[in-house]
Image 1 (cartoon, rainbow, N blue to C red):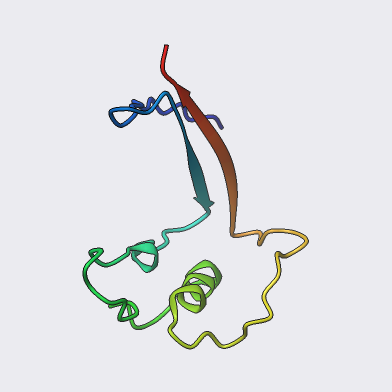
Image 2 (cartoon, rainbow, N blue to C red):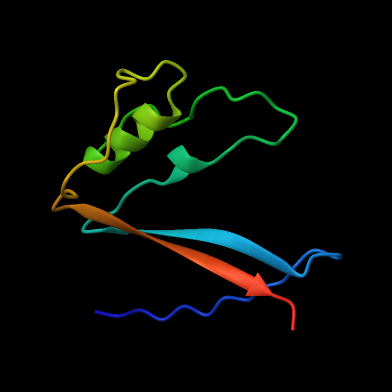
Length: 96
């Protein structure tokens, strides 16, 4: 299945080129992505409001945002879970 999503790009004043990294998560079931929310820039990170992970992807996200991760020796898995996967794309925007 293919899903096309239109996006609009822009550059800040004074910039001729910029790059954004787009990361797409695809899941079989519903997943809570609030684990990825960041606080306002002037507020300290206090962890997440979500208290319980409901699936393997949420468990991974909880470990990533934890102030004391359970394991610092993390490396990419050879194969993604059969319940979720990700794809990353670098989008370069140039002034014409």
